[in-house]
Image (cartoon, rainbow, N blue to C red):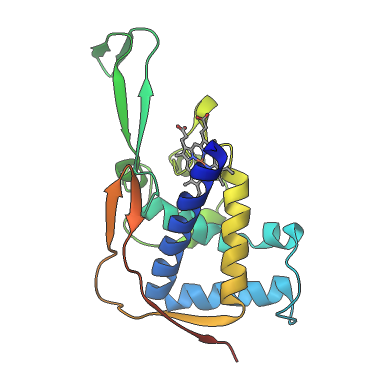
Length: 197
Ligand code: HEM
């Protein structure tokens, strides 16, 4: 049950965030569609294999960048088993800590131009400070066990959609509309969709 609940809404919301950011960044969308054509080939009805999904590096970077700016679960929780001292502050055991994922994902301490949607930042794999500040799937012993599956699932859905259809946002002006209910729930993202030539 955990797998079903934890793995469906989160995936759909991440997909919506990607559609939103692509709609605002046509050059990124064009480059991604080119990658899809290069890796998946010209037969748009062919099955997509996991090896091909792994090769979609730019699409992977888009997933990470959209979920950096719009983390599906923007706040995480941890409790300390033993008393701790952090940055000079003393915390008794069983203190509940809120991890502000959204703030970490947009902190200039870890990201260059943090508010800019720039998938290219993920192609430089040597930036370890950046990688350890990405918290979309949590971290440590309780890190999301569905991480790899979510990436493969969302990349496959993106590939199936964008290799076959031209997708545009109906409203390119309004900010992203969502409600927070432990998870960020996207509201009313309308798109225009037509078959690709
Ligand atoms: C984009 C999609 C997803 C996102 C953003 C996401 C995010 C997260 C986060 C932030 C946590 C808490 C991790 C922590 O506290 O360190 C978590 C836990 C969990 N996720 Fe995911 N998840 C996604 C997809 C999936 C999928 C596809 C599955 C299963 C098929 C899954 C199963 C779980 C389970 C079972 C836990 C609880 C792990 C535990 O308590 O030890 N998730 N997820």
